[in-house]
Length: 158
Image (tube, rainbow, N blue to C red):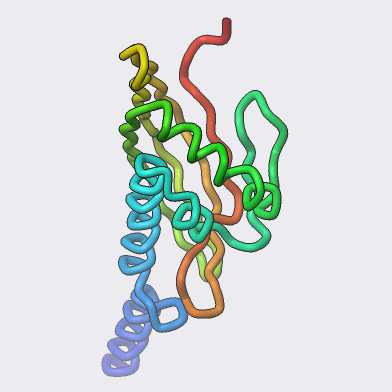
């Protein structure tokens, strides 16, 4: 009886350490945090191709003070917007994921972000800080892509 109990305890403990699709949750969390690092790098460089590659084909972005847009709409709108932004500004951006939760083929990340835009012509600086909640979808190859992205500023509405 003691050995059966021991086996059951071991099986229960091992089940708690199970991986999803051969990947540990730690690896998934690290992959999602890397997406955030890539996201910032793309925004700061104006790399719309790299930025759009972070998104699932069915992705939807829920922007503040603007209509939601699909990945297909972003494919059309983002390249010109990124080009104009980096031509006009020096950009600094950080994303601080405060929480990353993985559940099978889905994950979400919640946190804060900060962005500084320094106008190249005038030197005027605009600082933005806000929060986000983003849903990720595991792709067939095991990688993660942004599926839904909702964010807004912490500034008091004017």
